[in-house]
Image (cartoon, rainbow, N blue to C red; front, side, top):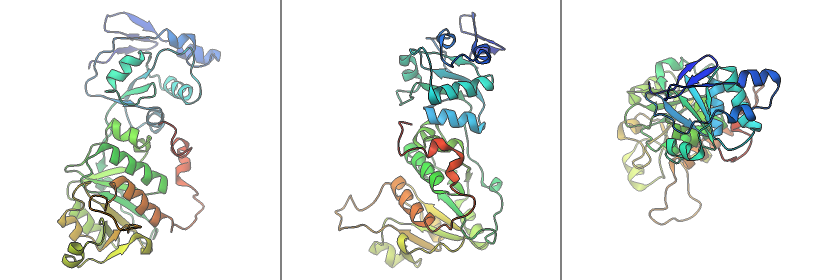
Length: 333
């Protein structure tokens, strides 16, 4: 497979020699992770990987190990420091507990492997993560909880937009995310990094018939709320669907919030399946070209406007399950 052949306690490099792993013994002796033992595993010439992908960034890698949704081939930690502390040490301990080989490539090699993305000195070789069929999402009855919220994404194509959308959705308590199978960005490592690892722990599903999915949920009693950039005259005149500001929206039944493509918005077929269209009104007169918002920014505003109506329950903050996603606005993740 192009990976290093792995055995218990040893890893064979492409030259055929074995490099002994001392981490488990060191951990049993109480040695701090990343000390002298770790520095011995320095491999500068890593072979390319087939059928796996390189997840990069501290939070995505740590959450991927905790979620255990992916097959992990090896952990790559940047060489150059005598010891590891904090979350890097936690990541090493998690890899040790799962028997994952750990290697120490130099910074230049990690830069090259990650196509010069911001990797924070941490990478995982992992199997791809793919959306599950929406039929596996389970049937949620509107009577179970009137304040259920699913986010539906039609043909979002930019990985950083998708990652930012997933991060906001997880933070604000969205129950499930459904994406269109056609012309949508896959769940790539770039998406995971942009989501600060939220992609690793969220329920993301997909469907090849988004219109049929929306119509089926509407028949079950869900409100299908689409989104538009603004109550423009051509929309108001041609659409019989009511348009309202997100600030005036009352969340009193299970809702599907549907967002469209970055450039063209919702397709006509999907928009026709909506019962209501939500919009974000600007705070001033805007010139052409500045009269709309980035889709990830719009998603955050819309979700906050809706989720701020959520009643307090004994469940508490949902993001508390994953502290790495809620410990600060930005921590270089």
